[in-house]
Image (cartoon, rainbow, N blue to C red; front, side):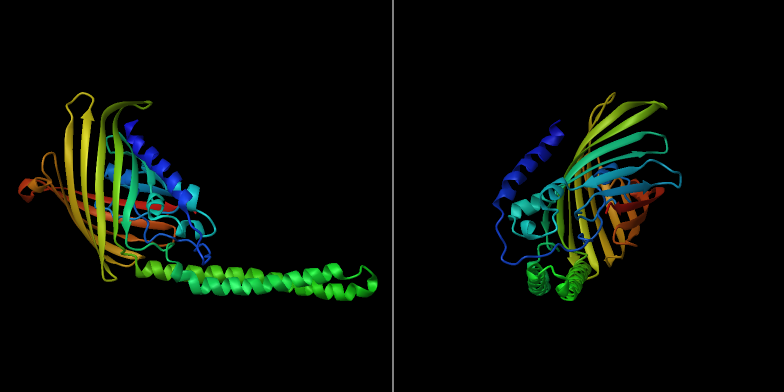
Length: 367
């Protein structure tokens, strides 16, 4: 139960922070999806170690997401679900006013990310994990850039106001017309003009959404390698499949980690990650693990490639007794779906080759 105290306390803080919203003098329409710089891996899958890149790229989503992971070509129920509940409850609105006028603390708390996942290894052992993540720092936020939408938004509301005024005038004229047949032709003409204005209003709104989408897409493309700092905490469980219809708890662990990234130019991204885990075995003594890793990415929002190095040890990650080198990439072939792939090469002491593990995963935004 202690694991969820963190989330409950943060949720309570958000309820207080969201009450401090101020009115913004410039209205803004909600930008059309996508709203994220990238589709990040769920923290639960990161904790279970089944992601192609173990030094994951920080970031946050503003929707529900499902991840599938594959470490072999056999069909396995490796799945994770991810969501941002505070964003959904308080800020996922058609208008950006509430979010843009919120305090910095409330905006930060809106990035709280909850995920849960389950995987099955080749020995049919079941692993479960749940995690909570929050973004402490982000150099860019596409929804918190009023100046980005200021010009198109002001122009839209001005044109919309003109059309609505004309609609009101026509409706008023229709009400004033006598109901006699001699005014039937005039009434038909006014109704025709009213229909034309309604169509123009609909087209205006459609055009505005397209303009906002173009601006958002360009902004995300320019800043796909924005700098982020994420902090997360999670709980994992390992079960033995003694029988087909039963599970036996073997080990549970508590982990806390920090990962951050810094963009260089428009093509490069450096990412680092530090994690501490404490495991409690049912029949064995407890143990701990330190994880330290770094990666370098190159590319664009649609395609990017990475190379990473990481080490993990029970006492000191700088001992380099176990080293993993990995390489792979991401392919975001639609705004809602991303394919990630990677190959890990594991080395023991004195850099002796131990094994090679291919990993692939698919992330899907549930829009």
